[in-house]
Image 1 (cartoon, rainbow, N blue to C red):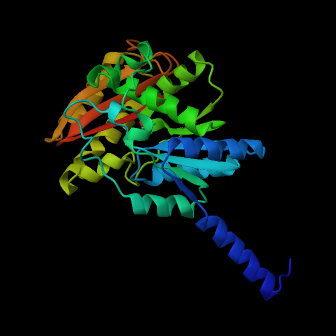
Image 2: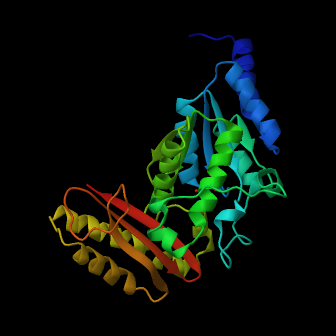
Image 3: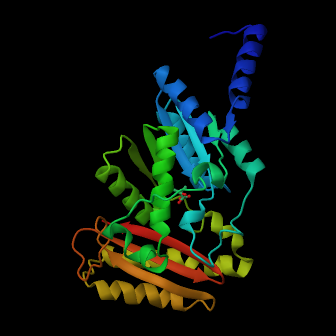
Length: 301
Ligand code: PAF
């Protein structure tokens, strides 16, 4: 196609306008109105729920959403109800300007950025009661965490009205909790699970990696090394669950600043411990490196 310089200029301007014209929406009522307008125009809506400090993992979700939906909404909200006492709510990393720039560059249509009072009114009293899928792994060491996650995600679904919502598989249990809630409450949202994005050396991307000192960053690789060891055992036909746990623990215990929260081998659906491995298993870890709690997992199949 041959374009005159005038046509090229106009097209360039249109492209730039689309990138610049991202809406930043602070209020729930305004967000809902925006979504209703999209629906009235017959547009599908995709939601990428985040707590901000966006990294390549989040960006891969936004790209995937952009490719599949008419209107892309990214929510940025550090949800207080999913943090326990003494956890990192107050120091959770934030970069509003950088986040908005990244969203804009990827062609996001709207960023929902409420403050806590928009999500939890002064008399808020209703929470999602999560079931057994929320009990093991992170649920055991972070009581109340998944109740907070499920509650905020349900609220985001009701405010943004998405057809699809995108979540990373690093938070595997979170995904299972949300899928279970969607099924049990008959919600009309497709939950799209996306692959964990890793640094070149294998460390799973996480906003919390920003807390790590250079020395801790090196030690944090023990999570990926332990999971890779589990994968090698699986490939070699190992069936004894204990042998997986021993091998993963041994790798983590080599690092002086790494302290195990849990090392588990579970059924990928129920998340219950597996003593014997047949065709599928999930190796899942939570490890504190210095003050930073990191999680990761690998599906063995
Ligand atoms: O995975 C996260 O960032 C959060 O748990 C979520 C899903 C945005 C809910 O606050």
